[in-house]
Length: 252
Image (cartoon, rainbow, N blue to C red; front, top):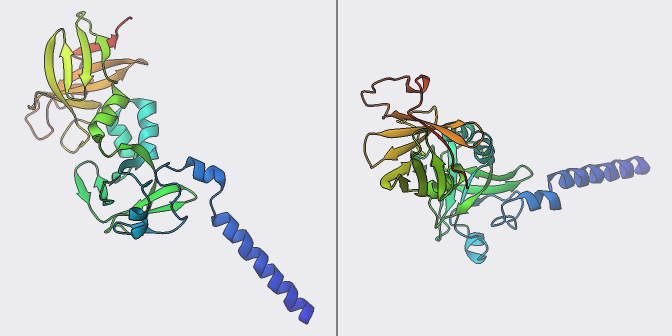
């Protein structure tokens, strides 16, 4: 009998050991985690105000987004599709004060968020959420706006295109587009609640005019003129009409 119980005790210890190993991150797991948080305790829930965030300077002010967003964006170059792939939570920000904000569709945000490292990666949970979502990856520094970071990923800075009328389009920044010497103020619309969703939308000169960019070939764009969904749109199916402009990269 003593031998039996000894065997059972050894078996239980073995099973516990295996479970612990399964729940522990490997070096590969940690290497795949965002650099700024990869040294956080594994599986520990860390919320805004947790002393561990203030104790270590490595936890820098950063923007984090669902990995699915960046994967889809690199594949399609379509912002509405990428944002949709990310689910309800579009971004999690940790600012200089180590406050954690959860952003929903770039339309609303909520404070007092929590993070946790798991075998899946960096997971995020807002105060009012029941489940963890993720994995999240680093988008960029909190000092840089989300619009600027995404703009560079979609269009690039100082990217040059030429349209069918041989006009040159140069994206000087996330706020400036120059077409044949004429400057246009632009804004990348990350919030898709009231804008067309068939392409990536730029608001022009802070007005009602929207230019919608759909990928054309590997590097070009088909550009459509449209307006807000809440406005009297001249054609609610603008994406089915011929594009207003077709852009191809300038030849160096």
